[in-house]
Image (cartoon, rainbow, N blue to C red; front, top):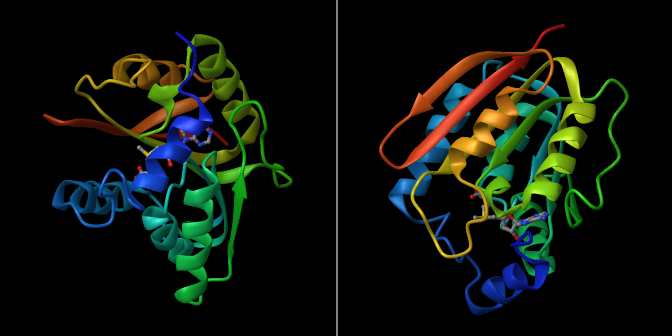
Length: 195
Ligand SMILES: C[S@@+](CC[C@H](N)C(=O)[O-])C[C@H]1O[C@@H](n2cnc3c(N)ncnc32)[C@H](O)[C@@H]1O
């Protein structure tokens, strides 16, 4: 099976602006609060958020980061994310339409000091996941933090098990675990790269 195709996500966003109810569901809001609470620093210079969707997490990250690079493969999600940021007067986010890992954003000098992979990497097939991991490795600054959060249960368009994704992230060079959280429905881990 290949990675889940870009047009699959575009179709979902055209049917419903928030296909996973990320903005409204208590499960999603609680998970987002937990993720934000797990980030070790109050402030980051430059964060990368692959698979940003409509920007619910992006808006919160923007409050704690000098700059955020938010990327999604679905043009409709990117448009919604941009519009919501603009409506909130948030100007420190670059929102890009890219099919990761085939296309990758510019990496700031020294790398991103925060990368948040939330509910994305289980859509990638083995080859894409390998390339995604290599690109994350090249993108994470020394001393930077890598957070990942993924649902555990099976679902139709899942390509990778969540544990396989998180175990592969944990094996990236120079990472030390800072938060290892697993509960009934999701796994949330944060690793810090040694300086
Ligand atoms: C389940 S949603 C998660 C949204 C958000 N990260 C969250 O946790 O609420 C997955 C998002 O990843 C995006 N996505 C999936 N595959 C992608 C890829 N190869 N490159 C960039 N974005 C992708 C989808 O369009 C969708 O917005």
